[in-house]
Image (cartoon, rainbow, N blue to C red; front, side, top):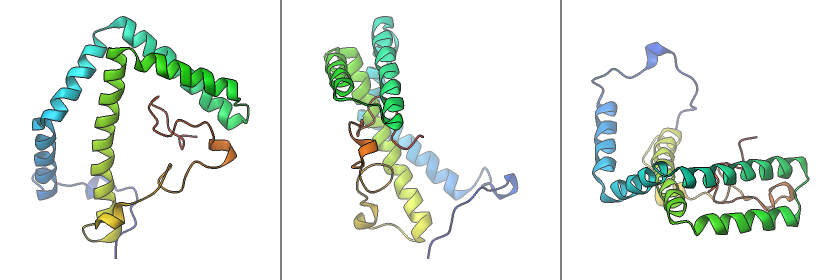
Length: 165
């Protein structure tokens, strides 16, 4: 059976020569050596070097924040959703921003996959099977089907999340 995770004190941390930290460093090295990682970093660096692309993204992120506030206040309208979708489409049409968003999503997926495997291992007390890793929808399970979540950015491509409230 797995272990319930809580906060640990500094005396409970792993020693610098721990096999867990050693393997973690190996995993990190493997990620850094993966050609896909290097490709994603190239997209991110190109985006960060372009002030216009950053300004476009920043404006879109602010719109996403506004949408999120309206959603949770129950004030989100179809017009708001159409505006958001139109802005997202325009943003995706900008190669530097589109490349950045795709790279961000790719790297976030790597992070999520690794974190999910570690969390499930600790929870279950064994290596997770593929079916252990299947969880539907948003917010760690379920779906965004409530009235509050309609019109929600399900892929969280604006940098926000549905459960950050």
